[in-house]
Image 1: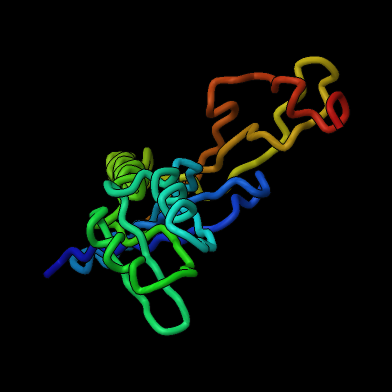
Image 2: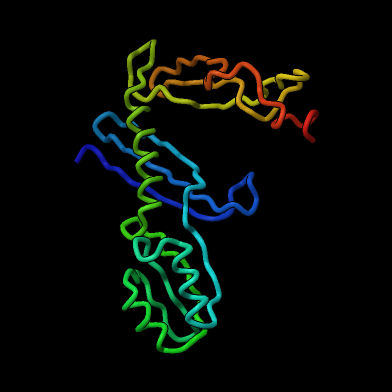
Length: 199
């Protein structure tokens, strides 16, 4: 086959929002016929990624409801057993009846987690957008962002912030690149993002 699509997801604390859980998804499309690889990545906080120590049925039920069970599956483990893909109340009750405590966590496998499926859909849209972005010099697809430049000026004091001021887009076929100023449409940053006005 000429085309191979692969994805990989990871879950943990958001790199800049501290204790907020995040889902990062990376999609790769390998085009063997043209010897090209396309890659996109998205980082989203729309995830139910969580875990909890549950010492009784009430704590397990509370955790399950908080992480949107049963539409989102769970994993239960203790020192003797590991149960994955739990997606009915009956199954969870039967497993819990083996005795507490349990370590409960969200099952983040994509086929059992609609929140993760939504993040994969966002990454897929980004991949389609990348494939529909053509180099202005050679018309090759995949004219994507190769560098992000922070420094968008604060609207109050003009101090550079960490927000994006420009993107560099590069063609991997011919090497052509362009810098795009203010790619998100904003010419200045809200002072809440300024390290001088809001340290």
